[in-house]
Image (cartoon, rainbow, N blue to C red):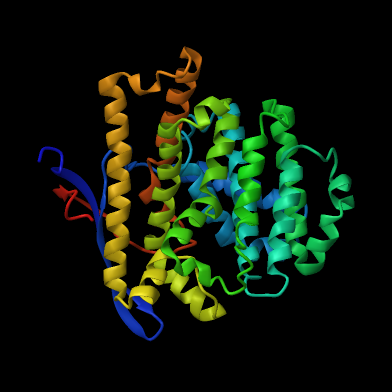
Length: 396
Protein backbone atom coordinates (compact mmCIF):
# COMPACT_ATOMS: atom_id res chain seq x y z
CA UNK A 1 0.00 0.00 0.00
CA UNK A 2 3.04 2.28 -0.32
CA UNK A 3 2.05 5.71 -1.56
CA UNK A 4 -1.62 5.34 -0.61
CA UNK A 5 -1.05 6.99 2.77
CA UNK A 6 1.52 9.65 3.64
CA UNK A 7 2.19 12.24 6.31
CA UNK A 8 1.89 15.58 4.47
CA UNK A 9 1.48 19.27 5.28
CA UNK A 10 -2.07 20.66 5.21
CA UNK A 11 -3.44 24.23 5.34
CA UNK A 12 -6.34 24.19 7.79
CA UNK A 13 -9.16 26.69 8.27
CA UNK A 14 -12.32 26.89 10.36
CA UNK A 15 -14.72 29.80 10.05
CA UNK A 16 -18.38 30.52 10.74
CA UNK A 17 -20.13 31.82 7.62
CA UNK A 18 -23.56 33.32 7.03
CA UNK A 19 -25.66 31.75 4.28
CA UNK A 20 -28.75 33.90 4.10
CA UNK A 21 -30.50 33.42 7.42
CA UNK A 22 -28.44 30.39 8.45
CA UNK A 23 -25.02 29.92 9.96
CA UNK A 24 -22.65 27.26 8.66
CA UNK A 25 -19.06 26.09 9.03
CA UNK A 26 -16.47 26.70 6.33
CA UNK A 27 -13.94 24.20 7.58
CA UNK A 28 -11.36 21.89 6.05
CA UNK A 29 -7.80 20.98 5.19
CA UNK A 30 -6.18 21.85 1.89
CA UNK A 31 -3.33 19.52 1.03
CA UNK A 32 -0.24 21.77 0.92
CA UNK A 33 2.54 19.90 -0.85
CA UNK A 34 4.76 21.05 -3.73
CA UNK A 35 4.33 23.28 -5.67
CA UNK A 36 2.33 25.13 -3.00
CA UNK A 37 4.20 27.68 -0.89
CA UNK A 38 3.23 30.40 1.57
CA UNK A 39 5.44 33.47 1.26
CA UNK A 40 6.05 35.26 4.55
CA UNK A 41 6.59 38.70 3.05
CA UNK A 42 4.04 40.46 0.85
CA UNK A 43 5.39 43.41 -1.12
CA UNK A 44 2.47 45.75 -0.54
CA UNK A 45 4.47 48.67 -1.91
CA UNK A 46 4.64 47.06 -5.36
CA UNK A 47 1.02 45.94 -5.13
CA UNK A 48 -0.05 49.51 -4.37
CA UNK A 49 2.04 50.79 -7.27
CA UNK A 50 0.27 48.34 -9.58
CA UNK A 51 -3.13 49.41 -8.25
CA UNK A 52 -2.38 53.10 -8.83
CA UNK A 53 -1.10 52.36 -12.34
CA UNK A 54 -4.28 50.49 -13.23
CA UNK A 55 -6.49 53.20 -11.70
CA UNK A 56 -4.84 55.89 -13.80
CA UNK A 57 -5.17 53.72 -16.90
CA UNK A 58 -8.87 53.08 -16.33
CA UNK A 59 -9.51 56.79 -16.01
CA UNK A 60 -8.63 57.12 -19.69
CA UNK A 61 -11.98 55.39 -20.42
CA UNK A 62 -14.05 55.62 -17.24
CA UNK A 63 -15.00 58.45 -14.89
CA UNK A 64 -13.14 58.85 -11.62
CA UNK A 65 -16.32 57.88 -9.77
CA UNK A 66 -16.69 54.60 -11.66
CA UNK A 67 -13.03 53.76 -11.10
CA UNK A 68 -13.37 54.54 -7.39
CA UNK A 69 -16.42 52.30 -7.07
CA UNK A 70 -14.56 49.47 -8.82
CA UNK A 71 -11.47 49.82 -6.63
CA UNK A 72 -12.12 46.57 -4.75
CA UNK A 73 -12.13 44.66 -8.04
CA UNK A 74 -8.88 46.35 -9.13
CA UNK A 75 -7.17 45.51 -5.85
CA UNK A 76 -8.26 41.87 -5.99
CA UNK A 77 -7.13 41.48 -9.61
CA UNK A 78 -3.73 42.91 -8.74
CA UNK A 79 -3.30 40.60 -5.74
CA UNK A 80 -4.27 37.61 -7.87
CA UNK A 81 -1.85 38.67 -10.63
CA UNK A 82 0.97 39.33 -8.18
CA UNK A 83 0.67 35.82 -6.75
CA UNK A 84 -0.12 33.88 -9.94
CA UNK A 85 3.04 34.66 -11.87
CA UNK A 86 6.59 33.23 -11.83
CA UNK A 87 8.16 33.77 -8.42
CA UNK A 88 11.08 35.74 -9.81
CA UNK A 89 8.64 38.45 -10.89
CA UNK A 90 7.82 39.06 -7.23
CA UNK A 91 11.45 38.82 -6.19
CA UNK A 92 12.65 41.28 -8.85
CA UNK A 93 9.55 43.46 -9.14
CA UNK A 94 11.59 46.66 -8.69
CA UNK A 95 13.34 46.06 -12.01
CA UNK A 96 11.66 48.06 -14.81
CA UNK A 97 11.40 45.12 -17.23
CA UNK A 98 9.80 42.89 -14.61
CA UNK A 99 7.50 45.62 -13.36
CA UNK A 100 6.35 46.20 -16.94
CA UNK A 101 5.37 42.52 -17.18
CA UNK A 102 3.46 42.72 -13.91
CA UNK A 103 1.62 45.83 -15.04
CA UNK A 104 0.57 44.34 -18.37
CA UNK A 105 -0.38 41.03 -16.79
CA UNK A 106 -2.45 42.80 -14.11
CA UNK A 107 -4.17 44.92 -16.77
CA UNK A 108 -5.19 41.89 -18.82
CA UNK A 109 -6.33 39.91 -15.79
CA UNK A 110 -8.44 42.75 -14.46
CA UNK A 111 -10.06 43.61 -17.79
CA UNK A 112 -11.00 40.03 -18.52
CA UNK A 113 -12.12 39.20 -14.98
CA UNK A 114 -14.26 42.36 -14.90
CA UNK A 115 -15.83 41.61 -18.28
CA UNK A 116 -16.61 38.14 -16.95
CA UNK A 117 -18.37 39.68 -13.93
CA UNK A 118 -20.40 41.97 -16.17
CA UNK A 119 -21.27 39.11 -18.52
CA UNK A 120 -22.53 37.07 -15.56
CA UNK A 121 -24.98 39.87 -14.79
CA UNK A 122 -26.61 39.19 -18.16
CA UNK A 123 -27.15 35.48 -17.46
CA UNK A 124 -30.77 34.48 -17.87
CA UNK A 125 -31.57 37.42 -20.14
CA UNK A 126 -32.85 36.81 -23.67
CA UNK A 127 -29.77 38.51 -25.12
CA UNK A 128 -27.23 36.60 -22.99
CA UNK A 129 -26.20 34.13 -25.68
CA UNK A 130 -25.62 36.70 -28.41
CA UNK A 131 -23.90 39.00 -25.90
CA UNK A 132 -21.26 36.56 -24.61
CA UNK A 133 -20.61 35.19 -28.09
CA UNK A 134 -20.15 38.71 -29.46
CA UNK A 135 -17.76 39.51 -26.62
CA UNK A 136 -15.81 36.32 -27.34
CA UNK A 137 -15.61 37.05 -31.06
CA UNK A 138 -14.39 40.63 -30.68
CA UNK A 139 -11.86 39.57 -28.05
CA UNK A 140 -10.50 36.99 -30.48
CA UNK A 141 -10.15 39.70 -33.14
CA UNK A 142 -8.43 42.10 -30.75
CA UNK A 143 -5.93 39.54 -29.48
CA UNK A 144 -5.26 38.22 -32.98
CA UNK A 145 -4.21 41.79 -33.78
CA UNK A 146 -6.87 42.44 -36.43
CA UNK A 147 -7.28 46.07 -35.31
CA UNK A 148 -4.48 48.60 -35.67
CA UNK A 149 -6.27 51.36 -33.76
CA UNK A 150 -9.08 51.79 -31.26
CA UNK A 151 -11.11 53.45 -34.01
CA UNK A 152 -10.85 50.16 -35.92
CA UNK A 153 -12.29 48.37 -32.86
CA UNK A 154 -15.17 50.85 -32.70
CA UNK A 155 -15.93 50.36 -36.39
CA UNK A 156 -16.29 46.60 -36.05
CA UNK A 157 -19.88 45.37 -36.35
CA UNK A 158 -19.72 43.71 -32.94
CA UNK A 159 -18.77 46.85 -31.03
CA UNK A 160 -22.12 48.72 -31.26
CA UNK A 161 -24.00 45.50 -30.52
CA UNK A 162 -22.03 45.03 -27.30
CA UNK A 163 -22.32 48.72 -26.41
CA UNK A 164 -26.07 48.64 -26.89
CA UNK A 165 -26.50 45.71 -24.49
CA UNK A 166 -23.98 46.82 -21.87
CA UNK A 167 -21.88 49.89 -22.71
CA UNK A 168 -19.14 49.48 -20.05
CA UNK A 169 -18.04 46.23 -21.71
CA UNK A 170 -17.33 48.08 -24.95
CA UNK A 171 -14.96 50.39 -23.05
CA UNK A 172 -13.18 47.36 -21.63
CA UNK A 173 -12.68 46.14 -25.21
CA UNK A 174 -10.82 49.38 -25.90
CA UNK A 175 -8.61 48.80 -22.86
CA UNK A 176 -7.93 45.26 -24.04
CA UNK A 177 -6.80 46.68 -27.37
CA UNK A 178 -4.22 48.75 -25.45
CA UNK A 179 -2.90 45.49 -23.98
CA UNK A 180 -2.80 43.77 -27.37
CA UNK A 181 -0.71 46.61 -28.78
CA UNK A 182 1.63 46.40 -25.79
CA UNK A 183 2.12 42.68 -26.46
CA UNK A 184 2.78 43.35 -30.12
CA UNK A 185 5.14 46.30 -29.73
CA UNK A 186 7.07 45.42 -26.57
CA UNK A 187 6.99 41.62 -26.56
CA UNK A 188 7.05 40.76 -30.26
CA UNK A 189 3.74 38.90 -30.17
CA UNK A 190 2.34 38.15 -33.62
CA UNK A 191 -1.01 36.77 -34.68
CA UNK A 192 0.50 33.29 -34.92
CA UNK A 193 2.36 33.45 -31.59
CA UNK A 194 -0.69 34.81 -29.79
CA UNK A 195 -3.31 32.51 -31.30
CA UNK A 196 -3.65 30.23 -28.26
CA UNK A 197 -3.99 33.21 -25.95
CA UNK A 198 -6.62 34.73 -28.25
CA UNK A 199 -8.65 31.55 -28.67
CA UNK A 200 -8.46 30.51 -25.03
CA UNK A 201 -9.61 33.95 -23.92
CA UNK A 202 -12.42 34.10 -26.46
CA UNK A 203 -13.65 30.64 -25.46
CA UNK A 204 -13.90 31.68 -21.83
CA UNK A 205 -16.82 33.86 -22.95
CA UNK A 206 -18.17 31.85 -25.91
CA UNK A 207 -18.66 28.83 -23.67
CA UNK A 208 -20.67 30.68 -21.05
CA UNK A 209 -23.69 29.66 -23.07
CA UNK A 210 -24.29 25.97 -23.63
CA UNK A 211 -26.75 23.98 -25.77
CA UNK A 212 -29.23 26.87 -25.84
CA UNK A 213 -29.94 26.64 -22.11
CA UNK A 214 -31.11 29.98 -20.73
CA UNK A 215 -31.14 29.34 -16.99
CA UNK A 216 -27.71 27.67 -16.62
CA UNK A 217 -29.32 24.50 -15.27
CA UNK A 218 -26.80 22.58 -17.39
CA UNK A 219 -24.32 23.36 -14.59
CA UNK A 220 -26.12 20.79 -12.44
CA UNK A 221 -24.61 18.10 -14.68
CA UNK A 222 -21.37 17.61 -12.73
CA UNK A 223 -19.47 16.33 -15.76
CA UNK A 224 -20.50 19.31 -17.90
CA UNK A 225 -19.82 21.75 -15.07
CA UNK A 226 -16.30 20.39 -14.48
CA UNK A 227 -15.32 20.77 -18.12
CA UNK A 228 -16.94 24.16 -18.66
CA UNK A 229 -15.46 25.54 -15.45
CA UNK A 230 -11.98 24.84 -16.83
CA UNK A 231 -12.83 26.67 -20.06
CA UNK A 232 -14.73 29.61 -18.58
CA UNK A 233 -12.93 30.11 -15.27
CA UNK A 234 -10.33 32.48 -16.71
CA UNK A 235 -7.23 30.63 -15.53
CA UNK A 236 -6.13 29.23 -18.88
CA UNK A 237 -5.92 32.66 -20.49
CA UNK A 238 -3.91 33.98 -17.52
CA UNK A 239 -1.46 31.12 -18.07
CA UNK A 240 -1.32 31.75 -21.81
CA UNK A 241 -0.34 35.39 -21.40
CA UNK A 242 2.35 34.35 -18.92
CA UNK A 243 3.77 32.07 -21.63
CA UNK A 244 3.87 35.02 -24.05
CA UNK A 245 5.49 37.38 -21.55
CA UNK A 246 8.08 34.70 -20.74
CA UNK A 247 8.54 34.05 -24.49
CA UNK A 248 7.63 30.39 -24.08
CA UNK A 249 6.13 29.43 -27.42
CA UNK A 250 4.54 26.00 -27.17
CA UNK A 251 4.14 24.05 -30.42
CA UNK A 252 1.14 21.85 -31.10
CA UNK A 253 3.33 18.75 -30.71
CA UNK A 254 3.81 19.65 -27.03
CA UNK A 255 0.26 20.89 -26.48
CA UNK A 256 -1.27 17.58 -27.56
CA UNK A 257 1.06 15.53 -25.36
CA UNK A 258 -1.21 13.83 -22.78
CA UNK A 259 1.07 14.67 -19.87
CA UNK A 260 1.21 18.35 -20.86
CA UNK A 261 -2.56 18.45 -21.31
CA UNK A 262 -3.12 16.92 -17.89
CA UNK A 263 -0.79 19.35 -16.13
CA UNK A 264 -2.45 22.28 -17.92
CA UNK A 265 -5.88 21.04 -16.85
CA UNK A 266 -4.96 20.39 -13.22
CA UNK A 267 -3.25 23.78 -12.87
CA UNK A 268 -6.50 25.49 -13.80
CA UNK A 269 -8.64 23.15 -11.72
CA UNK A 270 -6.66 23.74 -8.53
CA UNK A 271 -7.13 27.50 -8.65
CA UNK A 272 -10.80 27.25 -9.59
CA UNK A 273 -11.61 24.67 -6.93
CA UNK A 274 -9.87 26.72 -4.23
CA UNK A 275 -11.83 29.70 -5.54
CA UNK A 276 -15.14 27.87 -5.10
CA UNK A 277 -14.26 27.04 -1.51
CA UNK A 278 -12.67 30.29 -0.34
CA UNK A 279 -15.25 32.42 -2.16
CA UNK A 280 -18.28 30.37 -1.12
CA UNK A 281 -19.76 32.85 1.37
CA UNK A 282 -19.43 35.80 -1.00
CA UNK A 283 -20.93 33.87 -3.91
CA UNK A 284 -23.84 32.68 -1.77
CA UNK A 285 -24.59 36.31 -0.94
CA UNK A 286 -24.33 37.17 -4.63
CA UNK A 287 -26.83 34.43 -5.49
CA UNK A 288 -29.26 35.83 -2.93
CA UNK A 289 -28.79 39.36 -4.28
CA UNK A 290 -29.29 38.49 -7.95
CA UNK A 291 -31.55 35.46 -7.70
CA UNK A 292 -29.29 33.75 -10.23
CA UNK A 293 -27.38 30.49 -10.00
CA UNK A 294 -23.66 30.94 -9.27
CA UNK A 295 -21.19 28.59 -10.90
CA UNK A 296 -19.83 27.14 -7.68
CA UNK A 297 -19.44 23.40 -7.31
CA UNK A 298 -20.45 23.56 -3.64
CA UNK A 299 -23.86 24.98 -4.44
CA UNK A 300 -24.37 22.60 -7.36
CA UNK A 301 -23.62 19.61 -5.11
CA UNK A 302 -26.00 20.86 -2.42
CA UNK A 303 -28.77 21.25 -5.00
CA UNK A 304 -28.29 17.91 -6.76
CA UNK A 305 -27.59 15.67 -3.73
CA UNK A 306 -29.47 17.54 -0.98
CA UNK A 307 -26.35 17.45 1.17
CA UNK A 308 -25.37 20.06 3.74
CA UNK A 309 -23.02 22.97 3.05
CA UNK A 310 -20.39 21.32 5.24
CA UNK A 311 -20.64 18.03 3.34
CA UNK A 312 -20.36 19.79 -0.02
CA UNK A 313 -17.30 21.75 1.16
CA UNK A 314 -15.64 18.57 2.44
CA UNK A 315 -16.19 16.77 -0.88
CA UNK A 316 -14.88 19.76 -2.83
CA UNK A 317 -11.72 19.95 -0.73
CA UNK A 318 -11.08 16.23 -1.21
CA UNK A 319 -11.20 16.67 -5.00
CA UNK A 320 -8.76 19.57 -4.73
CA UNK A 321 -6.41 17.47 -2.63
CA UNK A 322 -6.51 14.52 -5.04
CA UNK A 323 -5.71 16.84 -7.95
CA UNK A 324 -2.78 18.45 -6.12
CA UNK A 325 -1.41 15.02 -5.20
CA UNK A 326 -1.62 13.95 -8.84
CA UNK A 327 0.18 17.15 -9.91
CA UNK A 328 2.92 16.45 -7.36
CA UNK A 329 3.20 12.78 -8.38
CA UNK A 330 3.53 13.66 -12.07
CA UNK A 331 6.52 15.90 -11.46
CA UNK A 332 8.12 13.40 -9.07
CA UNK A 333 7.76 10.77 -11.78
CA UNK A 334 9.33 13.09 -14.37
CA UNK A 335 12.34 13.64 -12.13
CA UNK A 336 12.76 9.97 -11.31
CA UNK A 337 12.42 8.78 -14.89
CA UNK A 338 14.14 11.76 -16.51
CA UNK A 339 11.11 12.55 -18.68
CA UNK A 340 11.44 9.28 -20.59
CA UNK A 341 7.68 9.38 -21.24
CA UNK A 342 8.35 12.17 -23.75
CA UNK A 343 10.13 9.90 -26.20
CA UNK A 344 8.12 11.19 -29.19
CA UNK A 345 9.28 14.79 -28.66
CA UNK A 346 12.48 16.29 -30.03
CA UNK A 347 15.07 17.62 -27.58
CA UNK A 348 13.89 21.16 -28.25
CA UNK A 349 10.28 20.16 -27.65
CA UNK A 350 11.25 18.42 -24.41
CA UNK A 351 12.90 21.61 -23.20
CA UNK A 352 9.73 23.57 -23.99
CA UNK A 353 7.68 20.94 -22.15
CA UNK A 354 9.90 21.23 -19.07
CA UNK A 355 9.99 25.03 -19.13
CA UNK A 356 6.25 25.50 -19.69
CA UNK A 357 5.13 22.96 -17.08
CA UNK A 358 7.51 24.40 -14.50
CA UNK A 359 6.04 27.82 -15.31
CA UNK A 360 2.57 26.42 -14.62
CA UNK A 361 3.75 25.06 -11.27
CA UNK A 362 5.09 28.51 -10.37
CA UNK A 363 1.80 30.18 -11.29
CA UNK A 364 -0.23 28.00 -8.91
CA UNK A 365 2.30 27.91 -6.06
CA UNK A 366 0.65 30.75 -4.07
CA UNK A 367 -2.89 29.71 -4.98
CA UNK A 368 -4.25 29.51 -1.42
CA UNK A 369 -2.41 32.58 -0.19
CA UNK A 370 -3.58 34.85 -3.03
CA UNK A 371 -7.25 33.94 -2.73
CA UNK A 372 -7.21 34.26 1.04
CA UNK A 373 -5.83 37.79 0.63
CA UNK A 374 -8.18 39.00 -2.13
CA UNK A 375 -10.68 41.62 -0.95
CA UNK A 376 -13.07 40.34 -3.60
CA UNK A 377 -13.88 37.36 -1.36
CA UNK A 378 -13.27 39.08 1.95
CA UNK A 379 -12.94 35.57 3.32
CA UNK A 380 -10.94 36.50 6.43
CA UNK A 381 -9.79 32.91 6.56
CA UNK A 382 -7.18 32.23 9.17
CA UNK A 383 -4.86 29.64 7.66
CA UNK A 384 -2.87 27.35 9.94
CA UNK A 385 -0.51 24.57 8.99
CA UNK A 386 -0.24 21.05 10.34
CA UNK A 387 1.11 17.72 9.26
CA UNK A 388 -1.50 15.03 9.03
CA UNK A 389 -2.18 11.80 7.23
CA UNK A 390 -3.16 11.99 3.59
CA UNK A 391 -4.93 8.85 2.41
CA UNK A 392 -5.83 8.35 -1.25
CA UNK A 393 -8.61 6.00 -0.20
CA UNK A 394 -10.15 8.39 2.33
CA UNK A 395 -10.05 11.29 -0.15
CA UNK A 396 -12.34 9.56 -2.63
